[in-house]
Image (tube, rainbow, N blue to C red; front, side, top):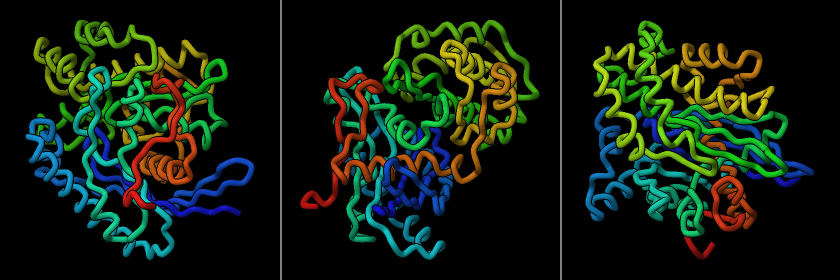
Length: 354
């Protein structure tokens, strides 16, 4: 039996924190996995702002932040290993944190220097999973769909509700996936305006009212008319979403309520167009009870919520698995998903001689 014990590290666009997962992967006829332990390390306000504003930095300052973030990950991983008495580790798959994602301009950049992680464990660190795909003409995202295909094929589709809501599924014999719409990246931004880190369980949104004009404007954005493969980034949200909130003078609760409705409308439209009967939900958005209620309103009997370890640990587990595939020189990016000119094995390994 071929067992592999891999650490996965992920920092998402919603800036919730650093996700860490310790996973076991076993390859027999098919792959199986176990998230043995997982944890999210919340960013304090200062560090969250530092990451949020990283796109404004000079090249030199960005390199400094990348090293600092690498040290932060190593420090928190050391605490995690001690806390859960972890002994066997074969490799680390580290996504890092995305600062720029503009595939149409040939740009994607994640920070998180791998050297402090290697210095901690002297185990190979697999990182920079996106840039090769962009060089090959792809979107560099989403990357998790091959994980969904290999580990969750018993569901019609897999939906992650994080900074963005993205979905993956098999269609006409090929895996396809794309970002559906922004999610927590906008909901958290609005919650921050009233001094909240996030809208816990959607309680503030539930008190607001849907503004039909704003909802129509959101649903009319050009992105939703595009065919996949396609992906979203922070810059797109700034340019296309935030100014709409300024146009309509609404309370924060009504802005949240309207955007929750927008997410539910966009996700359910995709589910309806492909006639999904079972969708596995994951990501921090699953804890937004009000959002889930609205999704279930539009898609009764379709939503399947997994156990807590999978909700919390799936993204970090995914990059552990992508790292393992890269270490084994196996395909870990699908051209049918990203739009690149071929399926490929992506990610850099530190140190290079491994």
